[in-house]
Image 1 (cartoon, rainbow, N blue to C red):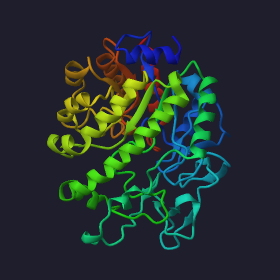
Image 2 (cartoon, helix red, strand yellow; image 1 turned 90 degrees about the vertical axis):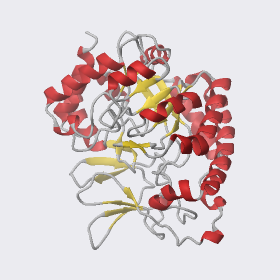
Image 3 (tube, rainbow, N blue to C red; image 1 turned 45 degrees about the vertical axis):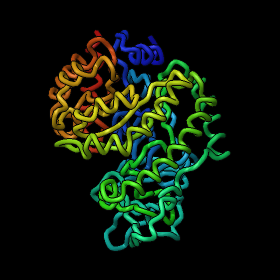
Length: 420
């Protein structure tokens, strides 16, 4: 099988010739650019290649065709045109990270140095005349959002203020996606994921709006979570209008991509934390489920695409809700969280959900364990999740910058050994 066939078989809950593998197809299944750089050196003996930062907020590195083929990665992805800092992937320029890694960043990404701390500051759309929207500390490896919340006046709150980033696809967006469709035609042997823009309701990474120069509305993370309970009518108004745009844009994307795409990444909103859900089933049903159902139904009626929900943490109690809402795929499958035991998940939900992730713990095992620890955990997870099909291998969220290359290589060795 090639990657496309392998993913199609997996999505049909059948057993492929080997486990399907994704690294780099989405902003939640990637590898930090520093780790990609070291991986290229180890696998391709390529010490001088500057890896492109394809997602500057998390500083994710490009897994290009050469590395993908060398590692047996099956899936590629199409991201939105603009990054979290409203930059396009073009006009690449060199940058040396705090850890000494030499990379390429988008030309539109403007970084200055905080004179007091030495931290890096990034700006929306590269406009250094406005307040910075992201900060990377000298000891850090990626950016954190800078909260630019204006004082909230309850009587003047207007849901349209939280709508600035949502709208119909622009002519520039359409041209970008048409070009992406041609790129996919040249990679017809690969599995394909399309990240749907503007379909993640309340994604907390997006709430601070690092891509907007003057964000209005509720943009403080704490205040947003409070608003789910305190201002449900406001939240619903935002989500309803957002959903209307998303439905129209999804119809356009289906027209552009057709059968080239196999999976639609709809949402990266986190509904869980390490010890349990972030919200009740009742709140999910009231605020999120009707909208998820609408988008899933639209995609399933108008295309053969499967739909992908990313939610970190302990979401065991919410999984039946996700299934009823129409989701086909769950990621990242955070097995270290409460109630997220792999065998239990596979037994109870494996017939209805494709598990995408969960292959190795990025918080502990692959970052701080031995290569043997990594190898053993990966083999165990493939045995559990891969039984009977319906499993795409990926780590539990993105592989981080300081992950030892020997551990990453041990992961890929375990993947290869699982089908020998």
